[in-house]
Length: 115
Length: 110
Image 1 (cartoon, each protein chain N blue to C red):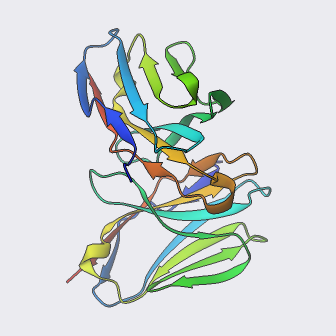
Image 2 (cartoon, rainbow over the protein chains, first blue to last red; image 1 turned 90 degrees about the horizontal axis):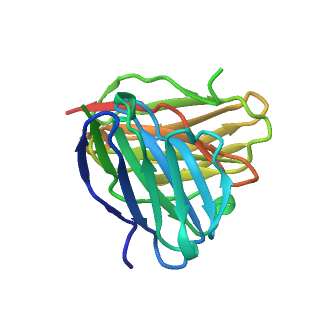
């Protein structure tokens, strides 16, 4: 079974530039999450989708971050304009039944460095 | 107050010892509790989940939950150097929102 795919793996940009990350979840997984993990910290939930609807985006800095999940499959996370504090690993995860087993399957992450 | 709190460590134990990792959470409505392991530079992977008060054992791992005290722990018996990683406690509510703690770094010395 193919895992969660993310791209790009690494991205270096200057502050005020824009960047986009892409995620393809495991086939059949209705729930998709984007987490931000700053070095030395735990993952912080940015947004949760159920199919193509948003379940929770309370922690998403909406003035600069946006995310969409077209047709309930692939998702993109965009940052515009980027700030230095956005340097982090952006983790995409998907799951079948989060309320029952809690097993999120994570992609390898996209590491962003903002200079 | 953070929603999920863990001691950041590092926690260092000798090989073969028991490692004890602790976590507290603030939302009394939390329903499901999880432990994830994250190796350096890698993504988190699920080790165990627990829903009911008491203990749950899986091989060398035991998860303990006390909802009255809002406390969950993970015990690793016969610790191995390969267990050296960051352990993330995560808590889920009815909506399936999974909140992680900051993680505890464990180092098992040969």
